Length: 174
Image (cartoon, rainbow, N blue to C red; front, top):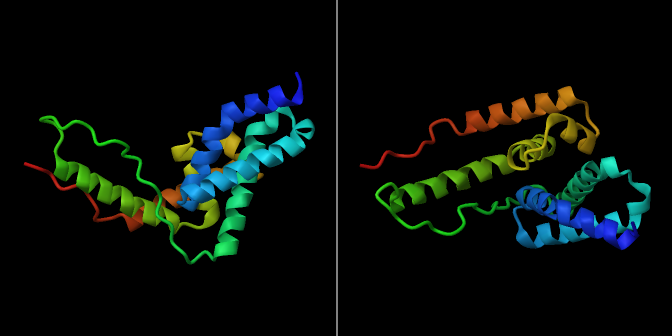
């Protein structure tokens, strides 16, 4: 298989993963686009040196490093809003009401703010596990840390989010 076909295959397979991860890490569509593009440029440049079995982990690790560079260049103190994932407003039925959707959107905004306050490693692992659906071993290989460390960081992230989100709940609508 020639290089162009291999690259196109890996791009099609993993562009959503890299973009989604970058978007959740930076909170900026423009930065996520740039990080995704740079990640795949680097893949093109190193494609012949990367094992087929390591591509996914390599892409995540590269995207993570680019996100870290992004935070370093901008200063970590700046807070970025993560995009809400409600998408289109669904058709209202007897089971859906505007108050519920407004409250749900508020809760997502609060969760995103709290997620942005996590230390980089916890945030990264939480996003890869909870949002991207990666397994412990995949995360471990991607970030070059032991599986048990992945579990510990994920547990710490969950506990911290749970503690910071105490008292927030959707109001029941009548």
